[in-house]
Image 1 (cartoon, one colour):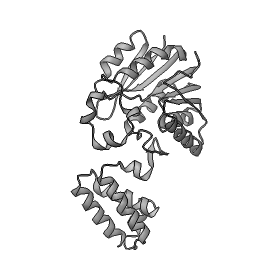
Image 2: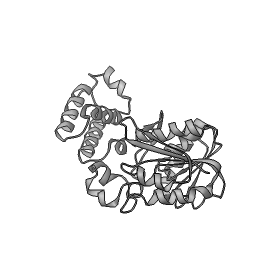
Image 3: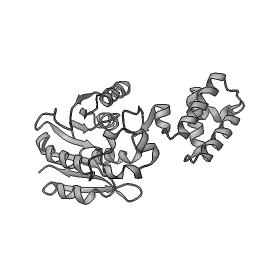
Image 4: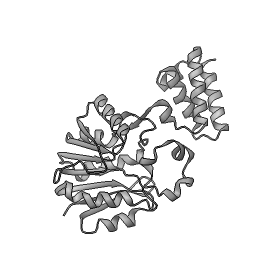
Length: 274
């Protein structure tokens, strides 16, 4: 089987299985099976696959057809120009979360001590440490997530300290200039409405926040004034429909701003400690 044939057959299988962007997915999975970049496939369409490559490719296609996200198959996802290792222990970083970084760089560019609450893969903590050249900390309630985030930080050369705790329980008073978070915000009542790839494969701890979806927002906003220094910023990603509630909890904070994503949906909220 040649590279060209493998891509044609793989894309056809994925399309028939209702998988989005089937050709691109086939390219990514074949590249992963062959341990090459996608551009290599375009330059060597007549190359014959080795037996082990063909077997791996078939297994990856089967996993994707069963709903397993491509990122959990390849164990990697790009975020803000850096490649992060991901596993089913952590939420897959989304492009929308890059807006949190952009807002932080705009409003808190002078922050020297940064905390990422619920770090998952470490995408926010690592990115902000390297973009701001700040002292960075990150927390997660999952020991497995914290270990993975620590591995990502070490591989990417980011000096981040990690703590396994519930939200900010392990963080000292009056210690941070900036707190960022992409907290769980899906109401548990909406589980069945989620995409199969999300519902069946991504970790519940990183997805669900009680029946309302506001539980973690409320707790973060309530504890943030203890941890933030005077004038420090709190920046959080917003779930769909969460803006009115989160705005209400931030009453009394100053310089509140809401930033939409490219689709015009409110995506990030930022506020400064009074």
